[in-house]
Length: 190
Image 1 (tube, helix red, strand yellow):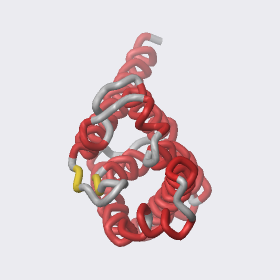
Image 2: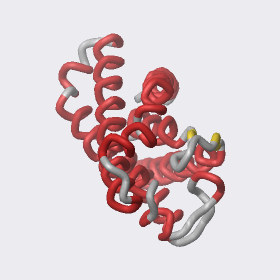
Image 3: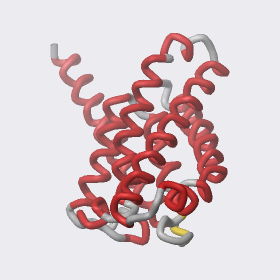
Image 4: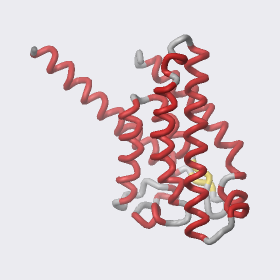
């Protein structure tokens, strides 16, 4: 019984450490900011996609939610080293909310494709890519909707401001997240 308790405690500790590390990666990646109008270019999407693909489903959602909570209470973990509830309620806050909703959807996609991804490396990479793209689409949809609601922009203007300029770069970030997360999972024996 003692070995089982130690194993569970060790597993739980490892899980907490991995979630915390992914939250730290999200924060650091948010600090890499290139202003592009009202929505800056950051590496946040890469970091969240990485967490989704590298962690277990509950851990991925916990890391994303933890990141948002830390930012909401004012820690400077969002783009431009900013934090506070105003960031979540502002014009670009929908993209932050989209991270959480996108993580939930992507985890669901991975779960739905689990039999397919168990076949081999190519299938695993394909399932990860589909999940990463689902994450990106959900994030864009929620971010786009909140930008329209808060800023008063019309659908076309909001799309051209906050989605269109980022698609190609974000697809590249999703591909890189698949590659890096796959390497990390293999290195950890997952």
